[in-house]
Image 1 (cartoon, rainbow, N blue to C red):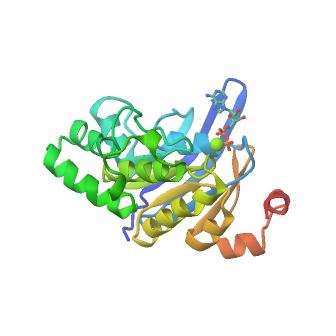
Image 2: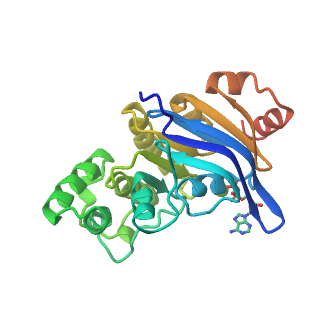
Length: 245
Ligand code: ADP
Ligand code: MG
């Protein structure tokens, strides 16, 4: 564990037009920590994730990665995007590239890795997400759960400092949810720093060090999963939990 938090948001505010989507957000994520973000639809969870790798800009406040403000453009921004990996609900794989090519493209193009090295590491990562035997298939030949595991391997290939997951299992058929959560749980155990937006409360209980509950663009409550699920402090959290548990 380092003493400097890996990701820090200080008094972050963000509007979309008149809509105040992030309100005075203060959040700090330590290296090795798994933070699960939950909350009703429209509460700003995706926007929060997207600000951390600058897919969205912020209006006021500061975001620091490893103690440094996020770069706005150029090489710094490319480096940020490899330091802060993102796994989306919709996989976003390149359809006309094989599974292995999906995983090696970023390391070769952005990190300048030679093909042999990127391939060796890519195969290692595909094995780690239990999909090495599918390396030469195309995304469309895979199930949703397999595609999402490829997306996780692809993010890992960039050697990120932190991985953001935005509802990674929401688009999956129910029988495929667990295989993706299992991979994420392995990563958490291995010490990967993760911010995970999810409605999978079982995962939150098992893997999270901390649960952050958002509503209307604010962090309403932050606690250990044990405390949060057994003794939610706010009416909003109690109401939310009563609807999903
Ligand atoms: P969540 O992920 O918690 O469902 P979002 O961060 O996606 O919430 O959205 C928060 C609010 O911001 C919602 O009201 C949503 O409609 C709005 N919003 C999100 N993205 C945009 C955008 N690009 N332009 C305008 N409004 C947006
Ligand atoms: Mg969302």
